[in-house]
Image (cartoon, rainbow, N blue to C red; front, side, top):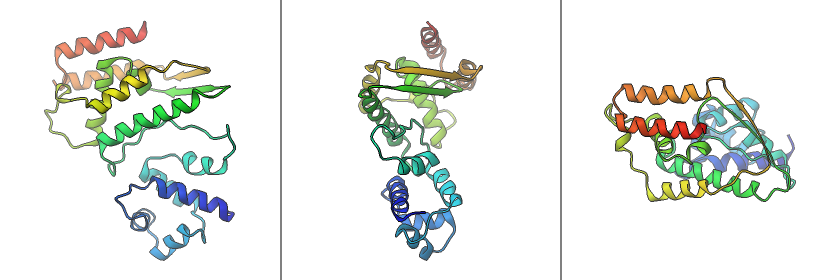
Length: 225
């Protein structure tokens, strides 16, 4: 692997490691190799192996595309824009969700300037960019996120969720975007059923009230219209 490519890949990895962690200690823990070997990789003397990159991407919840493909392509218009979720417990869940939405806004700003835009979406359940247009679905999406990324009491319900001003501001910002370019959607046959099952799961646990259930049903109905 040429030195310049090693440098770009290393820079991409280091940028993704949380600032409060020591990169050498983090990589030593993830890769299980000596710190001397870590230093040689960071300096670009030795390449990260494919196995190294798989371990790192798995721990940081980023794709290999983001590490490798974006390092290979620097020409204007050749960079892929990745829309993905990050739920690693290394991150503060609330802040990570805000960062997640900020990344969407940033990427949408970039794509809005494209002269020729093609978007392909694959999904097996409700997507964040769909839920932002429906207040209770958006609240449920965030509620589910918190449940999946934090240890919460068994009785932590949807009504306990408080959407911060920062979060509401980002939701409002995302609502303003208008779709442009060619869009292709590949949806699982159970796309809506998976979302309904998730809502039903929390409802059966009595974590969603009857009144909240009706509001979620209304949002789902409006989504289909």
